[in-house]
Image (cartoon, rainbow, N blue to C red; front, side, top):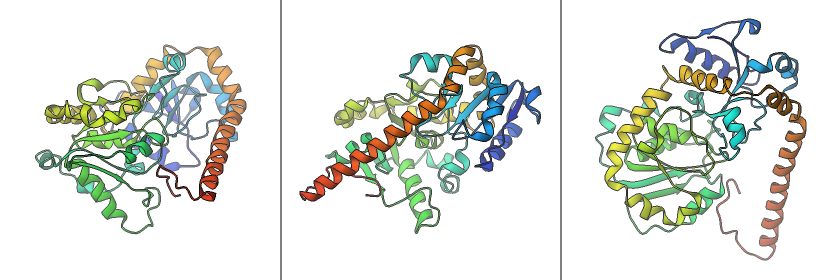
Length: 340
């Protein structure tokens, strides 16, 4: 398969990293070329797919263009792989969308995680936590999680709103990241609730560390390949109040599920295989695409984007009104807010 990767002028690291993954892919079954006319597949990493510099390009090559997107709240106007794919859009995800791992995670995830990991030794560590979660309050699921009162000493749920992963200049970054990894390594299960988007990079970090993930994201669309049910627990967001009882019923399976999670990561998401597996998922989409649907979504983008922006602005407006009203009457908001 001949593949052209569109240079991402906003984040050249993505383009470079994608090329690196293609170069180390095993087996070597795809070729990166420099001419989009000759390509069988064109990969686009842009966060905003209808960037003005892409309009003519997409219009000309739309039928062989595919997104590999890690955007938290994407607009599905281009066929491809999305880390926050939404399976509630059944027709779209059948024809145009597949789930995606965080393929750029080498620099988007915890950059120090490999420094603190020795898998052969870590798998033998005592597991002092039944389950754990260390993260920010970036979704209603997480806000509800932080409100729960656990009556067990072997459960760790800690809010890190004072830490911003995307600000490398803040104090104690390395220690915070080391603590994050250490908690995962000492856990039987790790909660992976949705964040800003339906997906979570934490899931793939947990799998890499050989720990069984608990996925709490009702609409998240899993990537193709793994037998997810064999190692991951899926808990509905509405069942959060029963979290302890549900996890306790699987407590004896943590070791086997952890091994299977690591095996799935090695087979589908490790650096030497993830590129080929992504292309395989794209080839699956290719067999189901409908040209007229592609064009309709592409040309509807300005309208869809305007609706999307209005919803974001309206939510922010309502949030501010509620918080100001509560503050005026000296009531404290019941849930933890990030950076508030």
